[in-house]
Length: 217
Image (cartoon, helix red, strand yellow):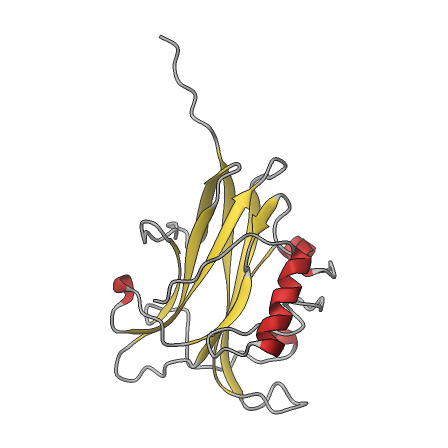
C-alpha cells in the first residue's frame, strides 16, 4: 500500500484540495463522489445510481475498518464499527473495500466511500457533514482497486486512510459509512445506466475515550 501523508483541514480547505485533484493534478487513485459528498443534499448514492452489482453482504465481500497502527479490525460482534479516540489526540484508520480473489467472483474496478453524520445530510457545506466536534481530513473518496495489505492477501481491494481528532466539544456520535463497489461507467445524462454497482451502509460509532484516573495511594 502506498504511504500517503495526511493532515487535518477544514471543510473549505478540503473543497480546494478536491478542486486541485479533479482539475489540476489528475490521479487514477483518487476522485470524489459528486453531489452526495460535495454539494448536494441527496440521502445517498441511490438518488442517481442503482444497486445492481454482483457483490453481496456476505463473506466474499470485504468492508472493514482497521486501526492503522495495529491493523486490528474495529468491527464489533453486532456488525457495527467502533472508533475510540482520546480527546485532542489523532487516530488514523484504514477503510478496506473489495472482494476475495476466488473463482466466480467479479472484482470491482472502483470503490467509493463516504463517512457522514446522517442527521447533517441536509446541510449544504461539506465541512458540516461529519460529526460535530470531530476534525477529519478525508471522509470521502473514490479509489481504483489494486491496493495491497498483508491482512487481505488474495483479495481485490482499495485501502483508504482517514485521520480523525475529537476536539474540546466532541461527544460520542454515530456515523454512516456509505460504500459503493462499481464496474463500468455511467452513461452521460443517464447515471442509472452503464454502471454496475453494489451499495452498502455500515454503522460506525465514534467514542471519546475517557481518561483513566489513577487511584490515590
